[in-house]
Image (cartoon, rainbow, N blue to C red; front, side, top):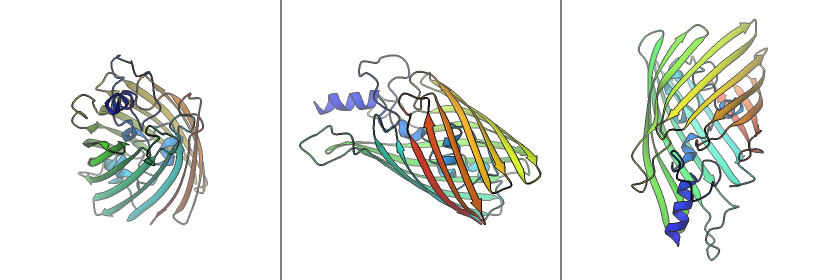
Length: 304
């Protein structure tokens, strides 16, 4: 019975979105650990996953994303925490994350921690246990010239599905970033790793992201497009905007188009933020998605 429940959870990529039918056999429907693809940074989440190549925003969560971009940050230390509700109408998950990135000359070193709990799910009524997952990641970015940087991340993920059964995996990413004035281009492979329980692949993909920044005096506008081709056959494309107003206020939005069984489905992201003397407050809300509608995230950061 527990093995049957486990198969259902894996087929639906527990911790990513919700639970599609257990009988799915289409290509890409059996990825595991979809939570690896959730944006922990509320800035990127509000852009529906776009903005992977941005260099001027906080790089505190670089261990979860793109440490190659962090190599171009002029800051010394960037730290942030975020909390939110993920897919409240399905998995009812509470998501808490923290990240810190330090810069030494041309290098950026990043650490990240995230825990996702599911108080609304009860697969074993006889136990007080609730499903959860844990992700710990580290990343390094290094500038090899004024315009190019490379980055690598590696991490451990664990899904505690039942009181006496859990799954774990190690994944790694390799990235390269081009930076020239307002143009940023990033590409590489993300979350590469072996199959989980010998049968279920991680949501690994080849990624390409482009960001262009237009400056209007003290204000600016980022236009970002990100694309992923998952090696399972899934795909996603996200278009996002990040408008800075006087360097203090920010308004963001984006839309994501994804294949039916992608780890993160199609949907609209909206968000806003404030920044003052290195302290930032960002909020995000997701809508126009059957599975993720109503999800939200708030984050507090500091950089100097």
